[in-house]
Amino acid sequence: MMEFACTQIREDSMKRILAGFVVTAFAPSAMFGFAVPGIAAVPDDRQEVSAEVVAQSLAGVGSSLRFTPAVSSGLGENPLRGGAVDVPADLTDGVKFTISDGTMLVVELPGAESAEEAAVLADGTVTYPSEGFSNSVIVSDLGTQMLTTIAAASAPTTYEYEMELAPGQNLQIADDGGAEIVDSSGRPVMSVLAPWAQDAAGKEIPTRYLVEGDKLIQVIEHTSVPGATYPVVADPAFVPWVVARCLLGLGLNWATITRIWSMGGAGSVQAAFGYAAARCVMGR
Image 1 (spheres, rainbow, N blue to C red):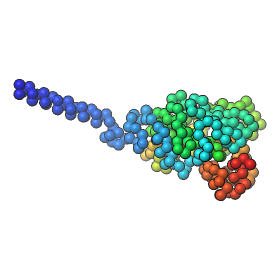
Image 2 (image 1 turned 180 degrees about the vertical axis):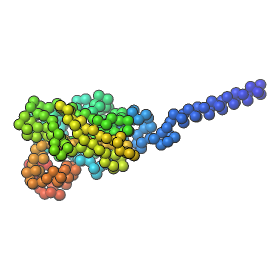
Image 3 (image 1 turned 180 degrees about the horizontal axis):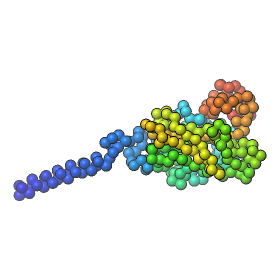
Image 4 (image 1 turned 60 degrees about the horizontal axis):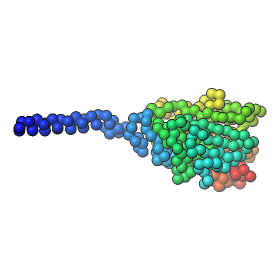
């Protein structure tokens, strides 16, 4: 009986040791510190990019964002210089712009089918949690930024924005590396600023746009940067051409206009560039 009891104790101890080995061996995030701050320690291609992760990521790159949310921004229809933008609760509905000439532009965001229902952050940013990467929408007085938050190196490097254009409109790459939508006469109706991407440590990530028919494709080379810190945040940013045309008419160059975009609101624009520039933003 004593020999049996000792044998049983030894077997139980061995099971516990083996169990501990299995748990540790298959938890690389615990052994090697693979987990990304703020993101659950799950396989890379299934990392959930929650609303909390997005909020932390955007706060980390806040000074580099093109726009800041307008006071009234959020779900539903938001006023936009020269029209309006409708931000959906269900991302499969697309983001809808009403342009100054009354035409409609619908932008379908990447991965919309797998995105969760919209969550509105404290500042008015609308985000759509998902796995691998997520989308967010910032509506400002100047334009609309559609942000991708990329969880890990296993996430895609190309993100497609399919446009539903009005008859006669075309999507094309602009001279500055951005893009623009033009009407049948070649007149721009919507501008997309040159692409931007940054990792969680503030490092610039190489990025560029491609156009295939009615698709705007952002290539984000986050896997090509040694030591890139995730999450990585990227855009495109859409600006009604009526705003850009007004500012260009004041003699401002594109570098100055890009600075104006980053200020977000009419008050800060007026303080830096005067009342006439603020009137362009406010549509007066």
